[in-house]
Amino acid sequence: MIVNEKWMNLWDRARASLWFVPILCTLGGILSAVVMLAFDYSWNDKWKLPFWLETTTDGAQTILSTISGGMITVVGVVLSMTMVTLSITSSQFGSRVLRSRIRDRTTQWTIGAFLGTAVYSLVVLKMVRKIGEEDFLIPHFSVMVAILFTITSLVILLYFIHHITMIAQAPEIVASLAHDLTRSIETIFPEKIGDPPPSDLPPSQKITDAQREALKNGVPIRSASEGYIQTIEGDELLALAVELDVMIELPKRPGDFLARQDKIALVAGNGKQDEKKLTEAINDAFYLGNSRSPRQDVNCSVHELAQMAVRALSPGINDPYTAVNCIDRLSAALCQLARRRMPDANRFDSQGNLRLVVDRQSFSSVMHAAFDQIRCYASSSTAVSQRLMEGYLRIAENVSDADQATDVLHQARLTLEGVTEAKHHPADVLILHEQYGRLKEQLEPLQSRPDPKQTDAAEDSVKEETREEGEASGEVIG
Picture 1 (cartoon, rainbow, N blue to C red):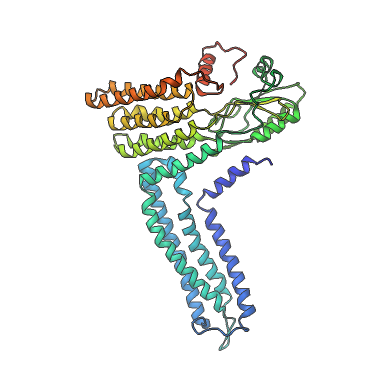
Picture 2 (picture 1 turned 135 degrees about the vertical axis):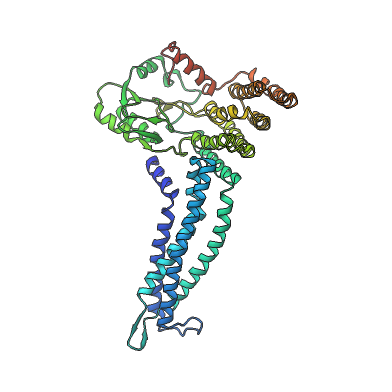
C-alpha cells in the first residue's frame, strides 16, 4: 500500500500543534456529557442512589457553574505559563527548538483536560432544570463525573507544574531534539522508493551511459511555488514514471529551499508526454512549507542541535556544557547512522527499469551538518574540542568503510588544526593530539581496506567537485 506522504506530513503538523489535542479533548467532553446525560435519564428512576451521590438542582447548578468557570480560568494560567516558557526557551536556545516545545504532549493534554472538563460541565449544566418547587431532571451521575473530572484535572495540573520546570532545562531540550533525530534516521535510512537494484542484476538492468546522457538532456520541470521541501511523494513519482514510461531525476531533496521556477526534476522519455500535465503531476508530489520537517529531512534535527551548540558557545551565553550535551547526542546519532545502509541514488521498478534518480542523503552530508559549525566555534574552548574528539572516537567504533573513516578523520583533523591555531595551553593541545592519534590508529586499517560500496559520501563529494570544475562527463548523475 502506498502511503501518502503529504497526508502524513499534515498529520504530523496537526499532532505537533498546540490546538489539536485540546480540540479533541473538547469534543470528548461534549460526547461524554451526552453519554452521561443519556445514562442518567435512562437509569435514574430504576436505581436507588446512595446519599453521597444525590444532589439538588441548586447544588448541581452551583457545582457545575463553579467547575466550568474555574477550569476556564486555569486554562488561561496554563497558557500563560506555556508562553513564558516558550519565550525563555527561544531567547536562550534559539527559535528552532520551539518546534519540539510546542508539540509537548503534557502541555497539550493539560490544556485539553481543563477545556474538556469545562465544556462537559457547561453541557450538563444546561440540562439541570427546576420546575416550580419540584426538583426535576437532576443528572446525579453526570454531576459526580464532573467532580471526578475536576479532581483528575487538578492532579494533571500538579504534574504540569513539575513538567514545565523540567522542559525548560537544556538537557531536556537536547534529549527531545535527539529523539526526533533518532526517529528520522530510523525512517530515512535506508529509504525505499521503488526496488533497489540487486548487485547481481544483468547489465541491461543497471543504469547505462545512454540513460545518464538522456537524463542529462531531459526536459526540465519547474517549481510552481516557493518554500522548503518537507516531503516528496517518492512512490507517487515512481508510479508516474512507470505509467508514462519515463525516467525522472530529482536534483532537490527534502530540506532544500525552492524558489518559483526552480528546476525540481528532469524527465527523459519518448517525448510524447503533455508537459503541462507532467509539470502539475510532479509539482503535486512535492509538499512545501515555511520551515523544514524531520519526516524526510534528517538534517532538520541535526541543524537544530547544532544551532543549540553554536548558540551556547557564543560569548553572550558562554555555556560549554550545553554544547557538550549536543555533541554527545549528535555523535550517538552518527553512530546509529554509520551502522545503516545508505540509500541508493538510482531507483528501479519491479521489472528492473530505471525510473528515478534522486539526490540522496549520505553519511558525509550529515557529518558536515552536525559538526562543521560547532567545530568552528569550539576552537575557542579546548574542553568542547576534546569532547568533539571523544565524539569522533565514538563514531569511529561504528564506521564500516573507508569513506566514512575519511569523513571522521577529516573532521578530527580540522578540529585539531583549529585548536592549534587558537594557541591554547600546550597541555590541552597535547591531549587533543593524543586523541587524534588514537583515532587515526583506529581508522587507518579501514582506509586501507577496499570499499565494496558504490553509494557513499566521499564519492558524492568528488562528483560535486568535478561538476563544479566543469569536468563532469555523461557518467556523472546528480
